[in-house]
Length: 420
Picture (tube, rainbow, N blue to C red):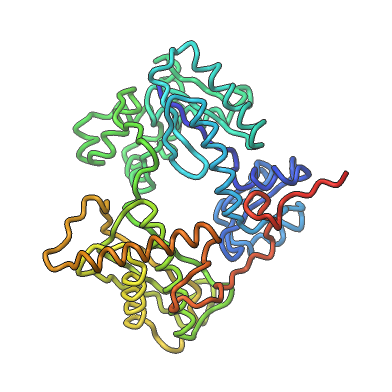
């Protein structure tokens, strides 16, 4: 049996930990630069606020319903997530952290009659120890556990925990479960299945295996088998390595000056390289992109990207920054107002799998590795961006965060004060 723990309305719930007066009120958390809604309380969902809605389109509904909006506080959310995962880690046989607010649990060695008690205990532990409400679903496969978790959120009578183990129960649920909500079935496949009259998960599993393979490939076939109780997706030990690493951001105001974009690309390239080293990887390709503002009518538009293939795999920030900035020179155009840019590292492999080229200088590689290690250690000890490259500059990229809460658990300056 596999379980899935999902933190309810996670970013909003993080804000509510330190401001209990938000309970019962419509609350939303916004993306970078206070652009779009990325988390909603149940009350915000009820009044019709959609995920991804731009803030400027919600001014009336925010005013009419007293909606409370917050800028995204990712350092705080990351710390709260780590606390939730630690409770899961010490309270269960094994977990796989799937995202910042989700983790799979390995219940395969746990007797079925003990799973329910463990699940309810976890919900109480996390609520009491961290302050985050969670929902847990358990079933025979990871895909079915996803379905069970949706039920635990949908029906209050479950008290946040749903166990689907009986074949009859699973069939009854799948007959009503929309196929587009099944984990592993994307938008394109949902439309294709709808064109063939498949609207529920149950109708999906009734399809012939050859038909599934022909229409949806191995991935679709794996989902088809998982819904029938066949375990096809194993539990990963630790967080799986990313195949691509992206750092991007929208700017507080449009940028037209090359130097400003140059600093932004250098900053994002440095951040991506640091993430790459954290997962002990090296990359061979760099993609950079620049975009004008899509919401400004009658403005000149220029959206372009560049792919840079490196001569060797690397995790060296200096090499990655230099190549990314060279790519910017090739695609930048004068006279345009750029709203967003980003850097993506791809063609990533584990550094331990890397075979040095014949002409690589072992001494130079050792020096580069030592330099990167020192940079990472200083930034870890004294704070992010304590040491940066000259190309990135010392000024932080300005962002709209006018609704930012305090960093209660990640900054001594923002720690809660208790007056007695």
